[in-house]
Structures are given as C-alpha cells and as structure tokens.
Length: 68
Image 1 (cartoon, rainbow, N blue to C red):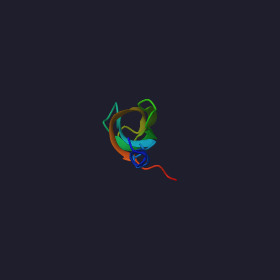
Image 2 (cartoon, helix red, strand yellow; image 1 turned 90 degrees about the vertical axis):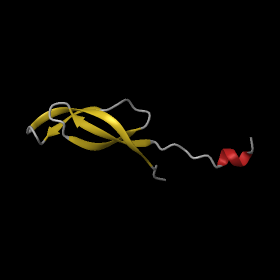
Image 3 (cartoon, rainbow, N blue to C red; image 1 turned 45 degrees about the vertical axis):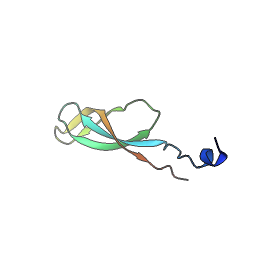
Image 4 (cartoon, rainbow, N blue to C red; image 1 turned 90 degrees about the horizontal axis):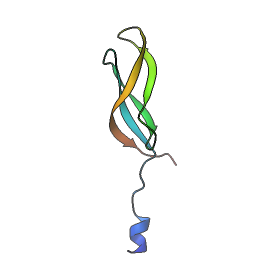
C-alpha cells in the first residue's frame, strides 16, 4: 500500500445526529451524541403531555463533521 493512500483516507466523525422519540406520546426531536457512546435514553419535558417523559434513540440521522 502506498503512503498516499494512507494519508488521503477520510477520518470518521466523532459525533452523530440521532432521532429521539418519546415512549409515551411519540413526540420527536434531534440530538447529538458521540459515535462510540451507547444509545441515548433521557428524561425530558414532553410538550404533548405537559410532563417529563422517557425519550429513546430511534435511529441515526447523519454524521457530523468534527470542528478543528
């Protein structure tokens, strides 16, 4: 393998944007997490039921470029 092939490979981004969905009402929003982290599960205010609800990560939307 040539040295130029090694130097020109794309680096993977460190963060990904994911879709979060409420377990109770189905309300959705986007969040950003590190690529190597576990799937997100958070408690957050749900505007549909006017109370806190558990949100679970449903799917990865896109990769984000790392800022240098």
